[in-house]
Image (spheres, rainbow, N blue to C red):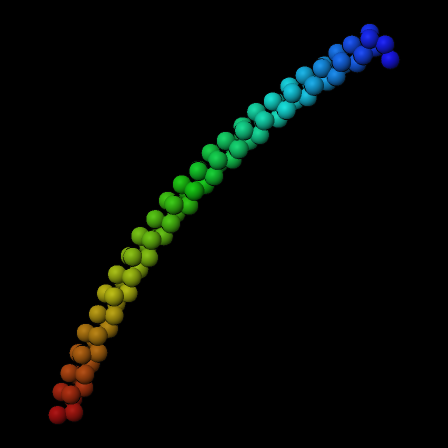
Length: 90
């Protein structure tokens, strides 16, 4: 191989390297964009899940309160029934 052929080969290799660097930079940029997009989507989903969780927690607390209120009402009815039953047996 003579000097001019080697220089031409070096130019081709440099051109290929430059193209590969451009491609790598483009892919890095696209990957970074995709990650940021996924992070934003994840944050939105997380926020929605947290809101839904809070809503369910409030519903749970409300149902718990209603249950306690019903239990108290049942106890009062049992006491009344017991008193009524006592009065009927006297």
